[in-house]
Image (cartoon, rainbow, N blue to C red; front, top):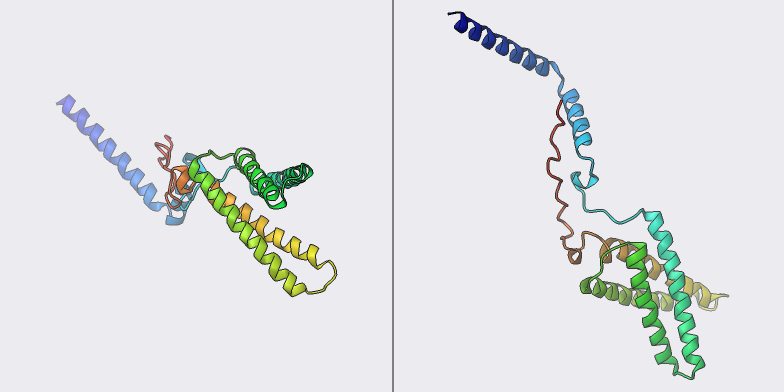
Length: 210
């Protein structure tokens, strides 16, 4: 009888504790409960890639990548010019010399931007996407230059102004295309589709133990 009485007392105490907990939780407003849930989730989801709507990181900050991209662009233009003038110095034809210097500069731009500017893995599909982007930028550059020359007419420095407009357009296209397409971690050639979010780490979203 004493044992049964002790068990009954324990059950009554447990039910009372559960009822008190339920009453205290019920007294908390929905807004307070939602705020507490968000705070707990923030502590658990230390990796920002687990946040809803996340489409994938891009290596490095925008300003850092832009600065490195401009440095690489300056270097590749210099290499293009040096190779071109060097081939002309040894009596190479103009068109083959310019084509060779452009190819050398393009290869150098791909290597430096992949390894330094965006720090992305390589692969044939990524290299092909880079070539397509550069070909598109070349078409845009030539087209903008021609349109600008027609618009400017006989304005002083019209050649320089048209060149700068064309260069600004193609450079912007190249940077945006590299950052968000060619070297984006979520690109198809990076091993994940552009709409597939990264998998959350195991245990993410669970409340930490009290």
